[in-house]
Image 1 (cartoon, rainbow, N blue to C red):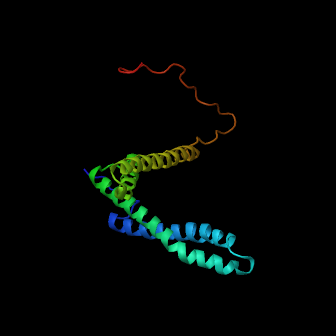
Image 2 (cartoon, one colour):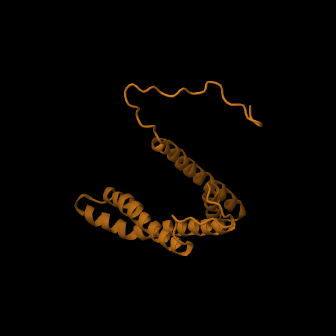
Image 3 (cartoon, rainbow, N blue to C red):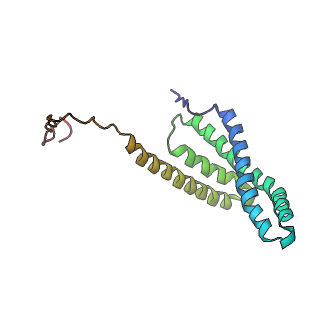
Length: 169
């Protein structure tokens, strides 16, 4: 039986959405912030604004395209794995990152593909591990807390000795 995740858009639209998000992140984060700062830094004093705009116009779309390709490949592999393995667990993004790294390094040969696949898997494993740790820590703040008892009422006694079951002592 296939698992249906209702929090996620259907796969073709999710890929298109992440292509656009990757492009926007690359253009804004890398093009505007990083290359804009570099253009400001490497321009003469009277021409800094033109240096910033020139660096953003020349490098922003390139970096946005690189991010879009990475995001599109990653999401394509994640959708494929979601269909092949009908589980939504930590391994799908890790395998997707490894496959994305391998495909992006395909022009350099099999050795580079293997190295990039391992690095992509490690990077996504660290990201997924961090997300799991943060969600576990933050999830504890939403644990149910018993309501306070009115004055004069004592806490019910808890059993000091655990019950012995049939299979577990």
